[in-house]
Length: 183
Picture (tube, rainbow, N blue to C red):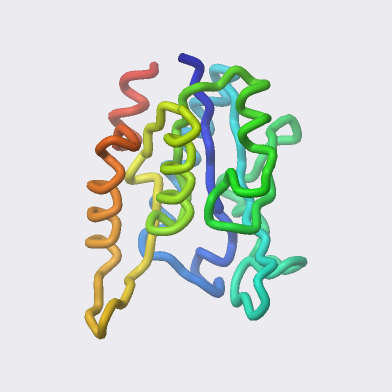
């Protein structure tokens, strides 16, 4: 199987001072950076996903703002593909599937943000399209959520979504475990 790294929405608005700060985004971005470096060293395909908000009333990833820019920790090189999306799924109304097919990629190594939204939706869509998926859990970040007046801490959100994705949608791994296997 030919692997491709998909780095989803590691953008300035998710970091301190941004419009939608995530819990653990700095650590997740460092792990994304380690994955990027490993893929760059072996000249393997890398695909950056950038969300640009088009929904009326959007409060983050607003076009033409610093917040929608890809964070410096994972900034794409000139030869790396950037796919722009407007929905949680990296496949919806984008050319990602066609690009992956042309690249011969059939296994996706997925990292980025937000776990409960774009990571989840993209992983499930990829699975439905026939890709083998690995989600690198500590290279993903999320936030505290609320449901029916109950607060759900980011760590619980992260664990629940990783558990839900683990069968049958993706293999779940840590950065360290993944990198120890591929070296």
